[in-house]
Amino acid sequence: MKTIILIPPSEGKADGGHNKPLKSVSGIAADLIEAIKEADPIKLYGLKKTALEKAITVNKEVLISKTMPAIERYTGVVYDAIDYQTLKNKSDFDKKVLIVSGLFGLVSPSDLIPNYRLKIDKLKAAKLWVNSNSEQLKNKFVIDLLPQAHKKAVKYDHGIEVEFVLKKAGKKMPAGHQGKHIKGRFVRWLIENNITDPKHFKDFMEEGYKWTGEYFLKEI
Image: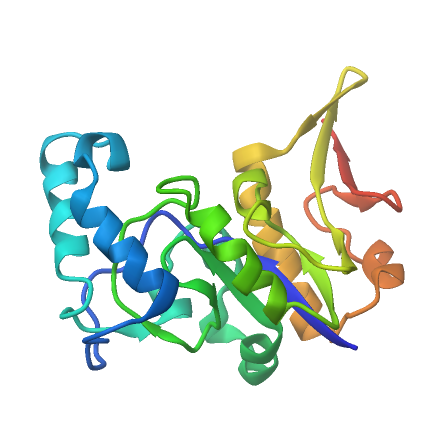
């Protein structure tokens, strides 16, 4: 059974591109682009002034702006920690990792995408994508590193959710933003070591996290 690693996109994205525009899309992505045009931009983006104007422009030009591979487009903490450019086995990463995008569904790292702005919890994107995404995950073993909002966009029969938890003064809490970097490091470790079986998760011990058999725990 093939292993798939699910990760979220980043809100931050690189501008521009060096490949041809999409020009057109079909299905759910096309429906969402139309829904974006009709939505209240203030409610949709939650931004103000210059940032709001940029988001509106980016989505207005989504089909005519240049594209680049998704792994280059996304620029957040998780992606910085993955450090794709220094990976020796990039082809393994491209085959095993899928990114859960609000606008494009399940995206491969090598898929060419434009800059865009759409969170998974807007315009019912997660609900719209869940059936299509889940179909693609049939007969796959999923290593799920998704935040709660993105989990609503996928269903799978075989897999494991991987959480990073902090423990302070006896109390446990999700690692939250602090957990983004370690998630990226974990994905990199999975690829570099060709890990597909959770029984090997105990061998990952970075930044003070240890596998409990259910989640990664760090005492602070």
